[in-house]
Image (cartoon, rainbow, N blue to C red; front, side, top):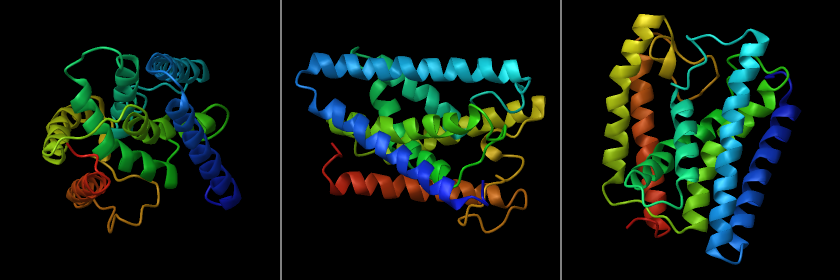
Length: 231
């Protein structure tokens, strides 16, 4: 894939074009009822994507407990996207926190994944479009909710979203220890060529990842503050 930059550019173009089209459809729907139906329809599509992916991995003989659970940051974000899009019409107390997580951590992680893709199971067959579908959705959903439903993040959201994520890390580390996995890249650095990582040597890259997650979290927060999306 790295030897085919034209394919990478085309993938980026169609991913971001699709994001713009979906947000535009949601924004210009005339009634809130139609917006809600369209949003839940997207949520259902994300459920089918998730289910089909795991069925596809099982059918191909690629499903493995050490690589296939949704325990990377993007996998957790994918589950959050499904939940918030399906529950958009309900008065769910978790929606605001999930939205803030997706804004402050989902947007940068989704964007980095799109720009520096890492195909864990290769990129043949369904894996290639699925990668851009799933990571494009992580980037799409918080921006969609911001524009279509005028969602806003809270003033202290940069702290809560970051610290809530840090609380997950020890749990993922224990899972990695018991099943021999590398979720959240806590045991081995990502194979994707990310210029932000100055070293791939364990454990030095781990605090570096945490530091850059914090910086991205702050950067997105202040961008939202500048555009008036902090309440």
